[in-house]
Length: 218
Image 1 (tube, helix red, strand yellow):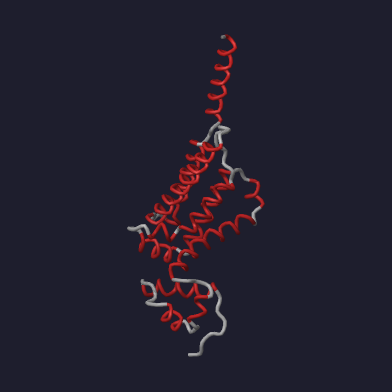
Image 2: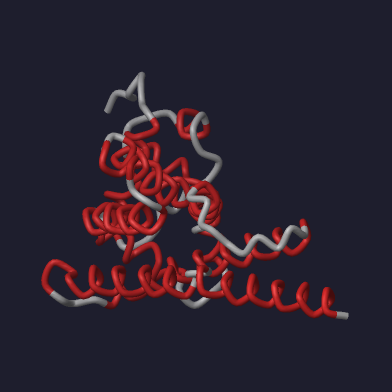
């Protein structure tokens, strides 16, 4: 069979996903994979350094596709942080569901080791940057080191919540994954309710007032 003269990044990704779903394993080598799909091995390396690089890229593509869809929505642009994050979750998991067979294969293969986290490292980087861009309100301590700790803790807790949602979705057997939708709504809303700093701000302001009054009386 004649070799294909042109091949795109998406061609390689599609061929890779088709292969692992059909054979339930990775190709034996890049050479064998390229030969089976009628393109030169060198073409593969123009886009990816390994099969693991493809896997990481696929999960990053789910994120990028999600953001692309959201940014086309005028409603999304007007949302507050809570509703933007809810929209992100619903859209992202629609992407996962459209590719559920591959996602289940990929994550189940790594579920008992640290490699699974390596597989999602690119997704984590993009997701935590997204959380930072949402500018979720935290306590204004006016102490740079504490502010950094607050934002880091917020990003890490958001990432953990995201991983727990993926795990829930993987185990969800409800029709149209409706239980995952409920899980998303309740978990995101609960997180923002916990982060609701207005009452805490009032307590701090009241404490400052009492302190100043006491100092004045003395």
